[in-house]
Structures are given as C-alpha cells and as structure tokens.
Image 1 (cartoon, rainbow, N blue to C red):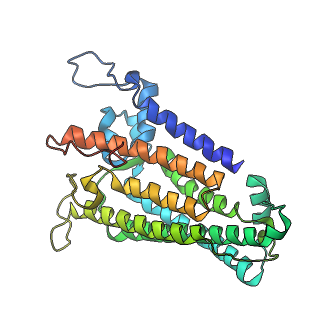
Image 2 (image 1 turned 180 degrees about the horizontal axis):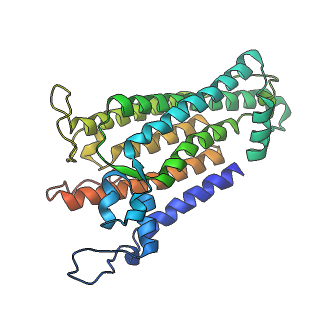
Image 3 (image 1 turned 30 degrees about the vertical axis):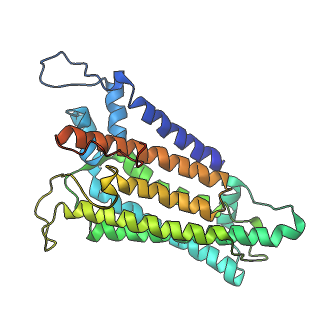
Length: 323
C-alpha cells in the first residue's frame, strides 16, 4: 500500500511536469490587447496548485476567490516543526526497540501493518544479519529525516528572508501531512520482530557509511545555497535591506538555477543508498521527490529567465548539464 501511494504521488507530479509543457495550459485566452492574459478556470486552478512564492504570478492576475486560499510562504517552518516532533517520536520508539527491546506501541504496530504489512525474512540463518542491516538502515534514515528537518527549521527561522510570497492552502496541508507519511514509510521498512521488541540486532554494511557521507555532503551544499539566497536580501552586516529577488551566484548556483532542489534530491538518494539500494518503496519516494522538485525548479528557472535579461544562459534548471 505504501509503495502504491508513493507511486501515485510520483505519477501525479510527472503528469504535472508534462502538463506544464502542454501549450493549451499556457496560452492566454483573453483577446490580444485586452491588457491582461487569462487562463481557463481549469488551467488557472492547475497553475495555482503548483506555483508558490515568486512563481505565483506566472499565471497573471489571479481571481479574488483564489487569493482567499493563500497562506504566507513563511509558514513553511510549520512543516519542519511537525517533522521534528513526529519523526523525533518515531526515532525514539525505534531506538527503544533496538536498545532495550521495547516493542512499538500497539497502535503504531497496527498502523504499520495496515500501511505496508510486516516485513519477514524467510532465509533462516541469514535472518538476524539481514534484519540487523535493515534495522540500522531504518534507524539512520529516521535520524537523517530528523536532522534535515531540524536544519531546515533553523534556516527558516534564523537564515531565510521571506518576502510576501504565498502558498495555496492545499499545498500547506499537503506539506503538513508529508513528513508524517515520510516517517511512517521509514518505519514500514523495519522488520516485524524489531517492531515487536524481539531479537534486536544491528549490522553495519558498506551502504551505511556511503549513504551517511552523501547525506552530509548534500546537506552542506543545500545549507550553503539557502545562505546565498538569504544574503541577496542582506547587507554585509547581515541586516535585511530589501525583499527583492535577484540572481544568485556561488556554489552550485553556477550550474543550475535551483541547486537547493537538486541537493534535496541527493539527500533522498543518500537515504536510498543507506537502505542498501534495494528498497523499492524508498526509490519510489526518490522518484516522487525528483518530479516534485523538478516542477518547482522549472517554474523558478522560467521566472529568472523572464525577469532578468542577462540571466546566465549556461545554467540548467535542476540537474547540472542535463535538465
């Protein structure tokens, strides 16, 4: 069930990515010279659900009925508060199971069984070793999610400088639910005996070291990119002097318009590596993140190209040298 859910989400954003390139969704329907370009109601709603922040104005003047559903983009930090609390709780539950053999709460065991079933390993002699690797993988990934959420919360509250950008209330509600779903996805990868507090065992594999190094590397670059974006609105003493958008330079901005989105993808790839590169459910999560971030990156890239005449032509939107 969990794998199908992530596959469905990935499919929705793939469809959205393709639809952004579909001409009828981009052509103005108002007569030439009317002074404003309007989209059909369906196309306008589609654009409104995808765009946020500086890209929100890409579909022209929005009707008042849609503006009533706007929330401040700075409320992004709510997502990370939810994630820190929820995934911190899940990390504590998993640690207790692995270190002192405490079973997961019954309600959580039942929920995980409904979402993805109990993981079983029928290989007999390899059971403890395999479970030990899966358990440590889940523990590390849960830790990565918590650390990433803590960093993003800190950045939102103390580094990022938000303007008057908005997000749709649907985007806001989805963001609140996203990190709850993500944590449950991680715990669904924990073997059934570990959920029950039986035979806790940890085994270190090569993938754990490689995944951890890649997570640290991608997180450092994402942080640098967020600092560069924030500094565009600050003077040398760190005081906010404007809320305008400008062309960012430095770090991975020299290659792509949205390196923070690319770094986000790499963070999730590092988690897939930590799971041993064989976890289908997590690769579907990576697929969702790829298409989700690609949509946002392409919209941002178009914004830069449309608003800055001398925007570097060599930059890609999302993936260096490719996309």
